[in-house]
Image (cartoon, rainbow, N blue to C red; front, side):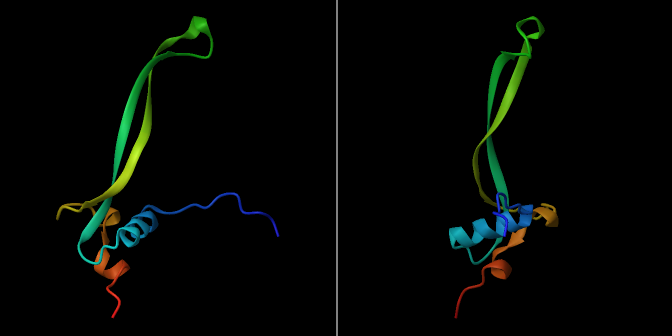
Length: 85
């Protein structure tokens, strides 16, 4: 059997996993990301150098969803992580 080298997840699967990891059992939640921006002179050769920017993901978390948030971006904690009885 071949060795698995990569797992892919859909946006909502990641949101559900974060809701469970955070122990949330109520509310509508969506993923929030923090980004860092760096500027530098870049190019494939010194003669082709141009100003450029690099964007890095510096953090991933959850934020309570607004009523206007698209349903495609929202998970309901009560549905994906109900309280155990």
